[in-house]
View 1 (spheres, rainbow, N blue to C red):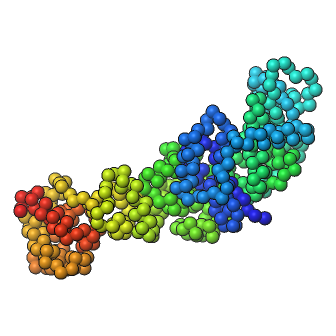
View 2 (cartoon, rainbow, N blue to C red; view 1 turned 180 degrees about the vertical axis):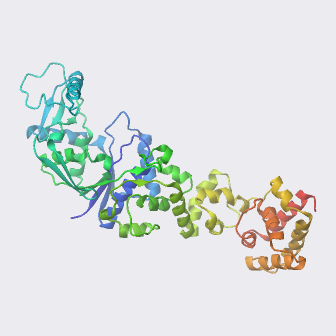
View 3 (cartoon, rainbow, N blue to C red; view 1 turned 30 degrees about the horizontal axis):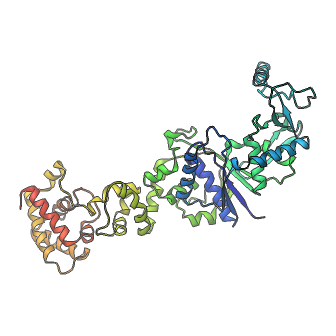
Length: 467
């Protein structure tokens, strides 16, 4: 059997964390088995579906690198096929026309509530041979089996049994001729030969209905795998306040897509006690058998920790490429020296996200023109300014401009003055970078040109009145 999975979002909003995890698990399962991953846009809700939402989903998938082998397919382009299947079900007696009005349906539900029963359609037109009422456009209902049970061999939750008596005759085609979700998804899964339906456990109630329709059509049943819910730190269903926002917002906040995917795969799946996974690791190791049955808590601190690990391990060129758009939005021109990949390499150890890096690397490309008053008052003392002046001459006289030679010049300066390294290091950092935290100063200065470093020292001297 060739594995075929699908991700089928509705374009009524952005691609959020829960949807991204579903897409990831489906994508990983297909990749692990050498199968195909299908992208399908379920846009039959015409009132709520928008082109902007479609694009947001496609952008999110592209950023995450979850490439589809087929699609995107759009359900609105398949209405003729859905009507054909509805007619097939009518002809076979597996569906019927229902002329109950909205008012009659509400009366049925209210009567059921009064009796203490589950509100549902009572089957008025299931076997009704009366003349249809004039002026009423019928819906088409599926004739659900009235006895027996639906058995679901769920690849995550295990065996599930639902009595058919719990299911009413659901609408599969509206009065305007448009298909409902449970009909269109069944036809799509059947026509696209989907072998594994991996989706959130909020769909568990739909599954027995869809199995019954597939069985009525004589179609093979896919294997279902319902993923546990993602919870906020308070144990409640994840919402915007927990981080259930568009995945592209995480891009804007400076997370590498591979870091977000690593975090998402651990929300419900595990491989021993391992936390750090590359994309290749995930493809190699992923299995539905290792998906947890209970919900997983979204923890931003854990995401930050995994993000930091990926930044530390990513190639410098990868970091530079991901940083570029963030720097452009900040108006930072990185065309002069030093190379951005060298800067990213120097900053990676301190950064949780790319935004952390983007917010701090400006001094590599633009000299400070002023200094924090409190920091300057503390660091630019008469003694420290004198030390920096002594260092300036040594820097001017260096035969080679590299980190080792610069470090030797700094060390010679403090040794000659018989002071600790800190007496020069922090004032020098503020003079060169304009900030109080940075990588080692010899490394920072080596990435700048000698002329730039000397000019920055001269500017500090002028600012303090020491020149």
